Length: 218
Image 1 (spheres, helix red, strand yellow):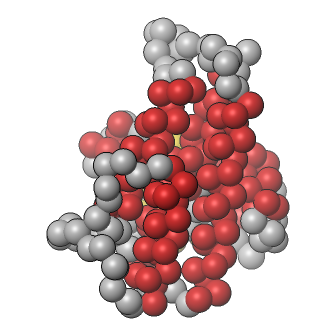
Image 2 (tube, rainbow, N blue to C red):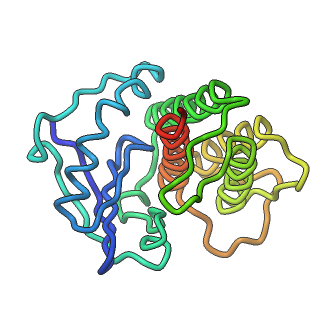
């Protein structure tokens, strides 16, 4: 069965994201290059599915990637963020689908935690221009992003929340939104994210930094 993919395109960058496999997303200059990059990262994504106990079969070629939507990107896309929700992500979620997506998200979070813990005390290699966060700042950055994503789900987030609290609330918010139930501590966000997109965005961010840590560890 082909992997459903959404492409998010600007003049300078295209993101290819697997709609049913949150976190599996890569970008490149063109659509074809983005699809090739996505396929190339399949072996790195496979352990995520295994950790989540979800059967995963990697296509042998890009012909196994079915582009179901093409979306105009934004400044965020060019900056390096898959920032546009697909139309398919507004579809209702069953309890079974919600559990599957959250299992994959939890596996993505655990992969980031393991990478960060494994690189503790290590000085990561800098980029070609001398840039790149070190692990402590990357952990803070991921926590701040999780708070922002939770906010976009409609949950009022206290500034002192820990990573564990944010993740617990995030999963609860996804389940409540999927079931059509109210958020217990709502905020005033005007256009809350659909749960499918929120999970995809959070999983992508966790894995993107997990793989960055792995690639930059001496």
